[in-house]
Image (cartoon, rainbow, N blue to C red):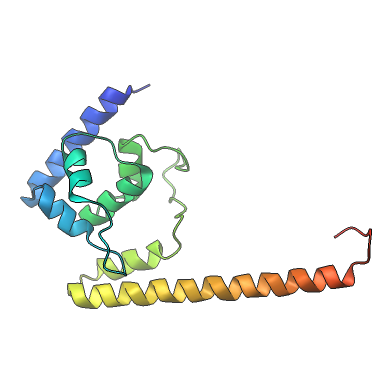
Length: 155
């Protein structure tokens, strides 16, 4: 079993190596993490500074780091001690954000940043629409089911 201090040391060594390999600094990592579809920073400069100094990120932070560095999310989650929801097999991680699979595909094509941002915004918009459609459909089915069940009957 790895202690938290060992995990922190291992993560810091890995992150240092990844940044050196790219000739990046903390601010470069912060820029690579970027902004969301609304133009809001995904994380603060001070948070990135803490990670570079060796603090362990949350699972969400680990995913941001993995995406910014084009690293394997599973590897970074395990490296940072964020093991909840990560299988002990080498299989894929089930993303809590269904758009991530498509965003990864967009990023793999290395479009210019403005095109990439527009495509990602479109994907997020499509998923938001799909979420509303599914909620409406479920509400309709639930209302129909309740209308056909009489008082005291099993749902």
